[in-house]
Amino acid sequence: MGVAEQVVEGLASTSAAFLVSSSPVRSTNSLPTFIPIPMTPTRKRNHDLLKTEPESAKEQLYQDALHTAYDCETHYKSSLVSMQSTIVLQSMFCDRLSSQLAAQEEKKQNSKRGGQLVGDGLPRLLTGDEFYHRVVEHQRAAEEEEAGREARRMEREGRAELLKTWKEAEAARLVRNEVRRTAYRDQVKLWEAERDRAKLERQRPAWNKPKLGKLEAPLPRPTLNDPEASEEGQQDGSDEEDADGDESDGGSE
Image 1 (cartoon, rainbow, N blue to C red):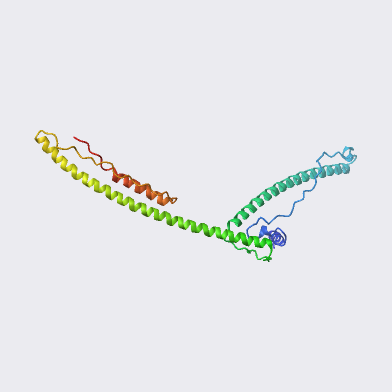
Image 2: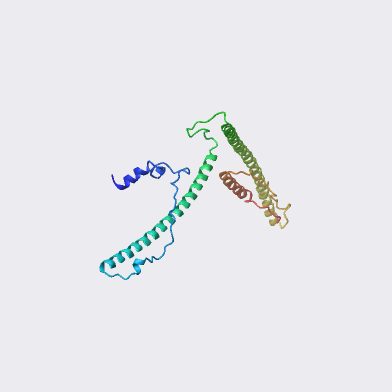
């Protein structure tokens, strides 16, 4: 077994087992609390042995070894301070992520109005006040959700009925306008014949050119929140404007 496998196996039996688990991390998971080691300020060593002039090669070796030991201590202390600072910052970051994760879990839990009252497998005192209030809140949320669904269903049905009535009325309006246009065209043809006769006889027409008059305007379309229905209504309105606008009132000649 390699070192990595040994580390994973060791973590699996500790409070940090969630780090090597395949289950999602939850806000209740936490790392062991880090306790920084107090560090004394780094000072330049001024040992008496280093002030003494070495009298032999062996004393020189001892002084060199002491210098090396002091340098190593300074280096290790600097590295330890850096590592502890990094761990403190990472702990602050993890705490912030944990609080945000807890808020998301609470929001997700509150959004589940149709969820189970008991879903974690833990025992409950069914006659306890806390559980009773949860039951009441659960029933209230379920009733509100059902009432909301029913209201939305009735609203959709009402909008569909209004739209159907509006389309029927618009179709009838278009038919009436088309009847008026047809009658207008027939009258214009009769007037054109009278105009041509009057020109040949160098007279004025016996009557003025007929006018179409103002057609029935489109009915206001019911306001709907359905984007597709709104787009369809805009298309219908464009078609009606094209149909109503293809004729103009005639003037007298």
